[in-house]
Image: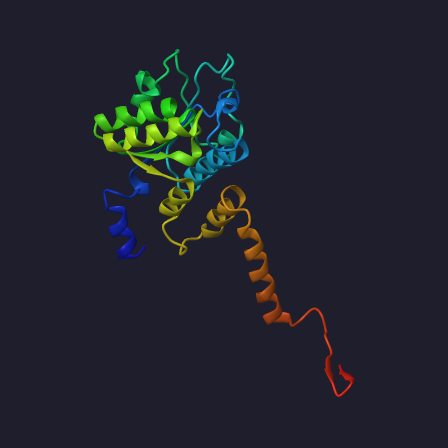
Length: 235
């Protein structure tokens, strides 16, 4: 790893993967029905992306759900399917995950102080634990586009609230890039595939075009086009 990347990891404004914990809070099928500030397929994809990126980056991941046996519904299954190492921590009715002693204890046992937080709803499930974490000396990166809220106004208010408290808003693409850190790693293409699958699907067309261009350089043109000259076709 280059000195430039190490320097970036030591920057307090950036995510150091070696110090990070991924917290995916209340991404539940029932709560998703309340979301109005981001379309549901995008929210689902971004939450899934964070789970996969944490798995690739070997970042401890904790999930939880708010009364999943009620209308809030279960966690979306993609999260634990994409990150089989993620640990689910049940709650006993607490709205704020940070009020659950088992949740805080699990985070403390990692010895890490940088929290990447996403949750539905943004103004409650993401914001409340982030505010508590900052108060207890953690760095909190709030992944806004992997959370979801009942209105855009509520999200705007929440952004102001967590930022004033010292948490740092970010997005899914930035989190992927900070955890990946460099293309000079053996699993770089797994990160790239995750990026394409869950964040920027149109980028796949660019990758396909690039692959075809490389193939032409190796084996030549697939289509043999003649050149019209003086009324004749040169083959």
